[in-house]
Image 1: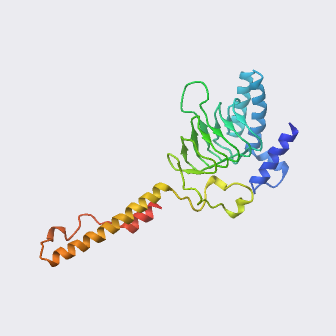
Image 2 (image 1 turned 180 degrees about the vertical axis):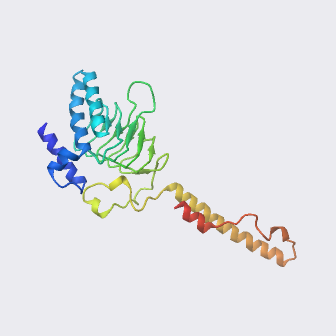
Image 3 (image 1 turned 45 degrees about the vertical axis):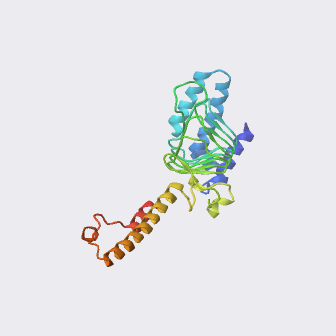
Length: 249
């Protein structure tokens, strides 16, 4: 138990540059407090003392703002940063070295009994406000962007963003240099979130500009031939591709 507590303290220093002392972590970090309560409540849950385990988790939620069902399994070196509003459901499974930020929900999508909450593999990072819903699997080293809503499996090493979450193109993720050495990206975002939907919209806008250019050329040639184009001289709606490209970004 004491070895596990030392790990819980050490992981705060590894992943939060604001941590200054062991005493500060022990007294001021709600994520650390929530994990102490959960380790104890989970043991009572496995021993069959269900009500007492739920009572401990309720006390923990009242004190920390973090709700972890005592039936949830959480691996080693788990870190909750800030913590307020985090909800982890009963059948959730969390691997080693995972990081959750405030407002994260690991929730269910069904009232049926059985596995109904997510499984996080090792080294998963979930950004602030993200919702991971249903009995899905998030692969090793995957990242979930802030405020994403994930309802499908996320492959290992991938980054999912958006509502509903989409996996960004592989091979383009850039980690912040400060976080790179620690093995995770703060808030699970990067400077190049290559969203495939945004790329598709940009492609359509570029294609539209090319089509407009060709149509103008055709109209110019028809006008030279004496064709009356008075009704087509002024388009009914102005199309500003540069403006649309900017707002898509």
